[in-house]
Image (tube, rainbow, N blue to C red):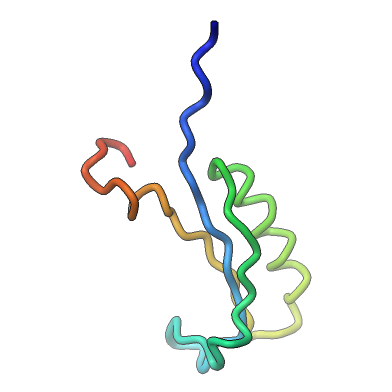
Length: 78
């Protein structure tokens, strides 16, 4: 039986920033929590789609958070 693929969880979030020189959201109640994805490729595809939808808003940014690095920081290569 094949071993299941290791989950390397990634979170995609975004929203309007308070300024272009930092990563502070203007209103935390309005942060778009897009979802959690099992690998970087899946998260990147969704991030790219959301980023393209908001291309006309310079202060709106989307990010990929490497949850697997936060959940298990001692894992080599995480």
